[in-house]
Amino acid sequence: MLIGAAVIIITVAVVLLCYFGMRHIMPDNPDDRTKDLSGSVLFRISALHGLVLALVFASEVVEYQQLGLEIATEVNAVSDVYYDAARYGEAADGIQSIMQEYLKVVQADEWQQLGTNGDLSGQAWAQWDAGYQLILDLPAATPRHESLRENMLRKIHLIAENRDLREHHAKSSLNVLFWVAALIGVLLVAAAYYTFTASRSNVILISMYAAYTGFILFTIYAMSNPFVAPAAFEPVLFKELLTELAS
Image 1 (cartoon, rainbow, N blue to C red):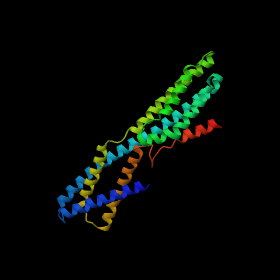
Image 2: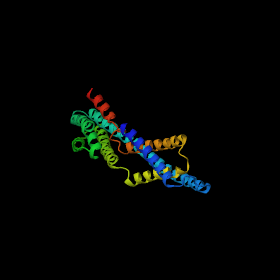
Image 3: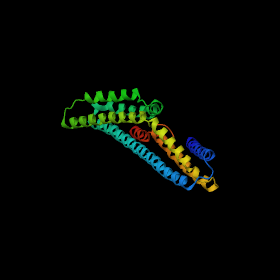
Image 4: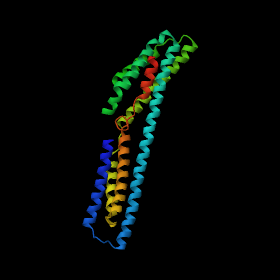
């Protein structure tokens, strides 16, 4: 939250600096035609700038929600493998302990690793592979066993797919060109305000615009890496399932 407050304060400071800088270098009393042109330019730039921020913000929100769905799908698949192994019988006992160990590694080690360098845990992959090998080697002596084995194979592949998607979320980030465009847009809008006198009410209104823009920029930045604070996804579902299985 301190970073968010700092971003908002810096944005307000930059906007006011640009505004007062333009008023210093431009004529004190612009004529009506200049004011009309300034208003037209301000409207068009602010509309484009707002559209860019809105599209990127919406995209980040969708990806953030998509990650939550993928995590829930993966946890559900782990649960299905675990309980299907219990239904299978003694031949699948080792699968249950592997799934429990997999959950421990993901929530204890992998989550922090994703936030640090965006990589999945090799140990978690080793647990996944061990479970996969055991499922492949299960003897399907009855139609019941065959059905359970097929379902476990399908679910363990689903776990791998969602792991890859999780790594994609961790490594994908906004292009630097977006941040350049966003900053330039803020500066141009601030510069176009110069035709308005520096009265207290005008400065407050301009500061309100800058503060909200800074908040949106910070929110976009926070959601662009969902494994790092302040908008980090916590492995709550993994922990809850591990607690359930342990009990």
